Length: 216
Image 1: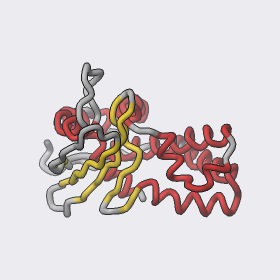
Image 2 (image 1 turned 90 degrees about the horizontal axis):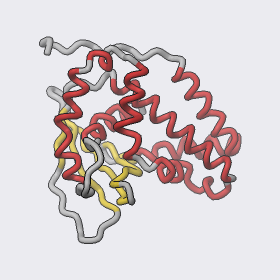
Image 3 (image 1 turned 120 degrees about the vertical axis):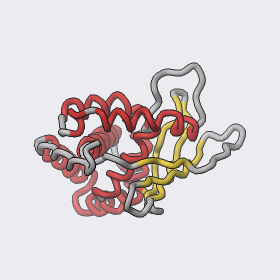
């Protein structure tokens, strides 16, 4: 799971827009236009590389989180059990699942170094509101990793609600774990487990990234 989400971060960072724009860019154009700037920020920011948790959290909150539909992601991850959850439980699930992914991101920032991203050719059908963008993570000396993004068009831009790394869906991967926890302890048991995981993550110092060979 750790490798899964680190790879997820590596590609999704490439899709962060530079700011508000008059027109909504198509999802593949969005990725292509900003990849170099975002990657250069990570490579040049010594505080992020050193594991400055406050600065990383600020960067994640400002640049990454606005481009995910956490409610839909949580609903997909919880699966059939979502229908039986109360509104309060649903809100708690979204909050804790979001926090879980945020904490995972902060750790992934410290190990993301020299990957590059290739966006596969894409043609969007007229009027499409949901698309899949195919990308590949490339790191020297290692096998390339395909990552497919399921994205939806919203009033505030394109947002991701699922992705597949090497054919394995993120929400499906969580769904099996969440389902087992609900069966054992109910919705409240799942919420409690997520809260505990987030508390542990919040109290665990980030590990500094290994220095790059070559000194760049």
